[in-house]
Amino acid sequence: MSGPANSAIITENLTREFKGRVAVDSLNLTISSGTVFGLLGPNGAGKSTTIKMLTTMLSPTRGSAFVAGHSILSDPVGVRKSMGYVSQMLSADGALTGFENLMLFARIYGIPKSERRMRIEEVLRFMGLLESSSQMVSSYSGGMIRRLEIAQSMMHHPPILFLDEPTVGLDPLARHLVWDKLQELKTLFGTTILLTTHDMDEADQLCDDIALMHSAKIAVIGSPQELKLQAGADSMDGVFIHFVGEISDSTTNYHDIKETRRAARLMD
Ligand SMILES: Nc1ncnc2c1ncn2[C@@H]1O[C@H](COP(=O)(O)OP(=O)(O)OP(=O)(O)O)[C@@H](O)[C@H]1O
Ligand SMILES: [Mg+2]
Image (cartoon, rainbow, N blue to C red):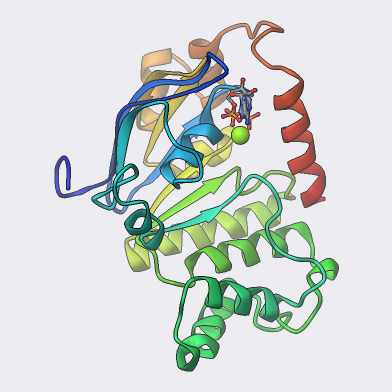
C-alpha cells in the first residue's frame, strides 16, 4: 500500500522511453477512489502508454505506480485482479456472439463455472445488451460493441476501470449511452474510472478531474471547472487550446495517426 487510503491510483515519477525517446515523463498522479479521471492531450502525448503501464502490459523505464494498493512492479497479478481494461483497439471477436465473447472473458477472469451464466446475464442487462446477446458481434453497431467491451471489462466486479478512448467513432446517442453507463458504474458501485478522450464534451460532462498531457508531461490538473477558470475559457476546447497551444507537425507522427484512424475505423 502506498499513499492515502482513498487513492485508487498513484503514480510516482512513472516514466517510459522507447529507444531513448520519452513517451511518458515522470508522471505524478493521485486519483481518488470512486471518481472519473480523464487523461487528455494531443496525439502522441503519452496517454495510452500511461494506461498500458498502469494495466501492467508495459513495464516502466523508471518510476512506479500503485493500482488499488498493488504495485505494478512487485504485484502485477494483484493489479490485474483489481482492474478492467477497454483498449483503444477493438477487443471483441466479431465471429462470436455477445454471449460467447462474455463467456470467454468469464473464463479468462477465472469466474467459477457455476457463476458464469449469472455474471454474464448481469452485465448484459446492465449494458442493455440482453436482447442481442445471441447475435454475432459482427452484426453489432459500434455503440453495441463498445458496451460489450465494457461489459467484458466489468464482469469480475473490478474496483478500477481503464478505458482508452471509450467513445471514439460513436454517434451522439451511442456516446451518451456509454456515458450514462459509466456514470452508473461510479454511482452504483463506486468504481474508479480512468479514461482517455479527445472528446472535450466527454471530458467536461463525465470527468470529476482531468490531467492534460502534452509532450509526455502533465501540463495541468484540475476539475473541468477549475481548468476553465484557469484558462479563462468557457469550454474544454478553450482549455485544451490554452494549455496545448499550437500543435507543431512534429508533435504527432505516423504511428499516432495510424493508431487513431484504425481505432475510429473499427468502431464505424
Ligand atoms: N510500441 C511503441 N514503440 C515505439 N514508440 C511508441 C510505441 N508506443 C507508443 N510510442 C510512441 O510514444 C508516444 C506516446 O504514444 P501514445 O500511444 O501513448 O500516445 P497517445 O497520447 O495515446 O496518443 P493518441 O491520442 O494518438 O492515442 C508517441 O510518440 C508514440 O509514437
Ligand atoms: Mg492513445
